[in-house]
Length: 320
Image 1 (cartoon, rainbow, N blue to C red):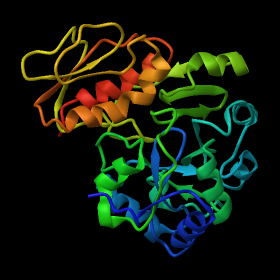
Image 2 (tube, rainbow, N blue to C red):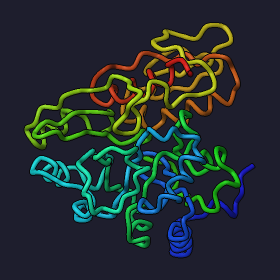
Image 3 (cartoon, rainbow, N blue to C red):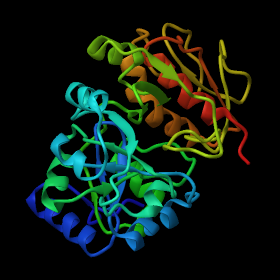
Image 4 (cartoon, one colour):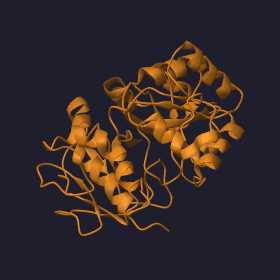
């Protein structure tokens, strides 16, 4: 059941309360433009450990550190000219860079999973920005869901996952992007795509002239979030590239299609941005029907469709 006292509208009081909880080593949830995050003080190892415990997240899976503005980045990471060019082009925004860790950063080793790199981003969401400014420090914040589950795009999704485990969920409304940030890693002068998102390889090349190398193969040794084989998964099985549902299946459609029982359509007009913004919320709604399988229409493998298909393929992967 939703706790109206726990879910708070974003105002000066709730932002201040959330920042105080972070300073005291607690975890809070807040919106970003991509999905809702589960935040902790990135310099407090005990606080970061609470994220892993709350999410049941394996400790070899690194976290993203959120910063209030691009100028803060070099306090925590080493940025070459390519990184600075990308930061100028895409921050604030749904764009994460995995960069060499500054040895004096103070970032908890739990965040990096013992690696010498860390994933950082500057969110564009105004509520997230206000909280980061009020807290005045780096906030580690993976998606606010149990590990491997469907990512949350509303405050109620977060409340349904954690309930009394959280004191504050700042309700900034539905997330407008709906899928997690693009993640790239910079190695020398190469840009390697680790997780697709709403900023595409074409966007990166258009802004920088740099060709992006794709590295989307699932791994048990991730350097950034979203690289595990099974992720973003509903309780139901997921059947991909379905032209329609079989008997007893829910149906997640895309584009023009005949109406079926237990069906939701990501975008009747075939708009990939609309589909991305609806993906996780509609998967949750269909999963709540408690049917054994969710059949999913084919999604074009271009532009933002690459990110959508990435999430769907991980949702469909066998759970170990």
